[in-house]
Image 1 (spheres, rainbow, N blue to C red):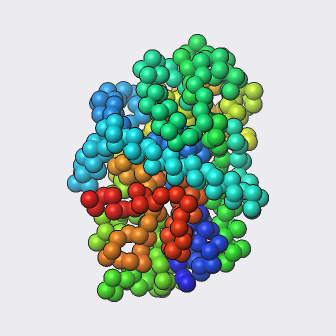
Image 2 (cartoon, rainbow, N blue to C red):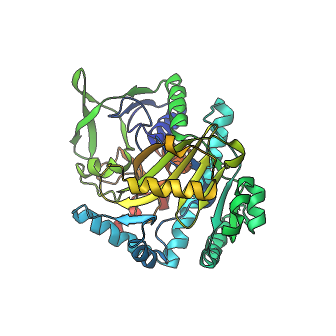
Image 3 (cartoon, rainbow, N blue to C red):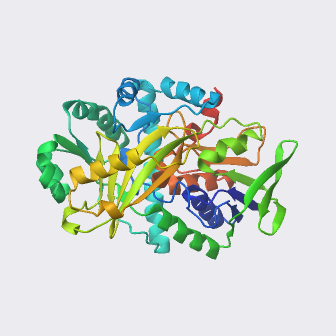
Length: 424
């Protein structure tokens, strides 16, 4: 049975890999010349089940108003003059209650924990390496308000059985010794020992090679021209390549195009509530290993993650609601550099940093959409909407999708991940 996966980011490649393990004949198509060159290319590097949480929370509306007036705010909104932006924001705000936050966080943590376990199994089975580390995540707090807000996350982590440690400033420096120079700025921290780190783009590239060894075909530099439908079935995808146009046909089709999934799904009459949330990163060469982090440190004040690779530091964060604008904003670079230099001075050479931006596909409730696209097109499947957690949730999402297409029972509950939660 043939499956055509649309998209070769980390979500599309993991989907293809797990489908191939189940014996499907898989082809992946993407407009980029290689895999993992868009949102997967330079993300924050976190595999953070313990930090999995929706952006929509009970205190976010008030915070967002304050952030609009701050130079180094973690969130900014720029009108893209589309009705969809306003509709998405309205749906986002409807999820900013304590009840919805707890529900959505539980869904996200469940998938993220499962995905981390899938990644560990994959690593054992394949021997894949991607500058991985298993040293946990440390979330640092600078204010009493942040410490107080930590309680609601701890409650969910406890209910889900996720290990954690609440730390004082001395405990923070025990986990991340280089923080000793800024210990007086910290009031405490939340350590999540089960979290991991790694280079997402490197993982995607190496997993694609292993998928090819299983028979997966990759058609890169292939632009989707149109979808061919008949009755309630998708019959084929017409693509443009350097050699001309052709039509690829399959029994099942997986839309894993990240922020661009909504546009394609609309041609099928499907409403996929995914909005592009723009994020930024700096990749900084390490000049003093002892002054650098050993894993990931999340600065709760600025919502910026600082992640250690072998010889580099990845600093990632911020969220801009600005449509599909991919221009690099120098003010965001300034913020990322400020956070890195504030917590880990002298660790890296910021003047030599690579500055990058990408679009995270975000749903209003933060939970991705995985499963059948709808009753109107029974052979179309979705694997999108992972927001800032695509790397964290990639393996679990690919495994779940492969199970559903193969009519196997997934290891976790999946109904709450389907698009039907928006239909009601």
